[in-house]
Amino acid sequence: MFDWQQFWDKQAKHKEELRQVARTLNNQLITEQQLAEHVQFMVDCLGLNGKQLLLDVCCGNGTFTRLLAAHAKKTIGLDFSEKLIEHARLKSSDLLFEQANAMKLFEWPHYESYFKRVDAVTICFSFQYFDTVEKGFMVISQLIPLLKHGGHILLTDVPDRSKFFNYYNTIPHVISLIKQMATGHNLMGKFWAEDELDFICNENGLSGRKISQPPHFPYAHYRMDYLITKP
Ligand SMILES: C[S@@+](CC[C@H](N)C(=O)[O-])C[C@H]1O[C@@H](n2cnc3c(N)ncnc32)[C@H](O)[C@@H]1O
Image (tube, rainbow, N blue to C red; front, side):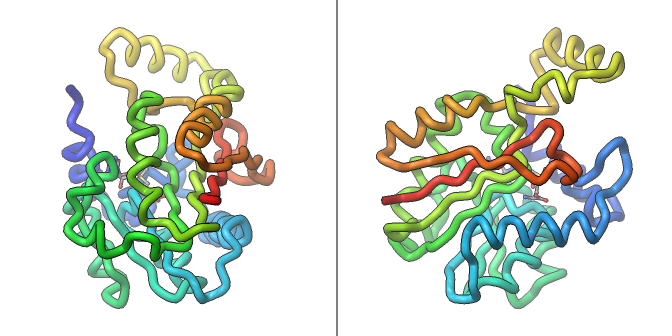
């Protein structure tokens, strides 16, 4: 089986902060303005106003975490890549970054101490790596005990099944898809369907809704957001 943890540890060797977390489009880094606009969009979706406890799961090197933290009271970043967590800690020594696997969140030593304390969880540009409904279910269901009632989970930049062919629309992309299908190793991860995310929410007693990104966002042509609320 492909070792994603090793993949992200290697990715952390890149010099550019945005390349370490694959925040590129056609091999170009996304711009500071695009980053800032996306963070503001997330802040608005979650209603962050400086009073919340925010958990950024799959935080990578903390690029988004740091910008989101300016809108929360306390922010914690979790990621299973030791190397990316090291970068995150170096760049934002005032925030708490810890190594944890989102699929085994219950193994995070502080898991139980945050029960019912978290106002908002973000999973940015990462939900595709939970590449079956079972894995996605496992991640979401382990986050529920942490959330306060009324708390939110924002899945942002999720590959959108309804836009699959907006991504696989060039010969190189289609060739890479065929190679990935043949080797069983899909770098892009799962293109989620809205009804699969609705199913996970319904089974867990949560409400959820798809949110379309503003069309000028760098990945809006093939990605979506999904906002989950604990009643
Ligand atoms: C594309 S990067 C996104 C990083 C950051 N959230 C962002 O938006 O810039 C994907 C991140 O997901 C993390 N990741 C993937 N699977 C994970 C898992 N099971 N548990 C924790 N982190 C995971 C990787 O280590 C990597 O940092």
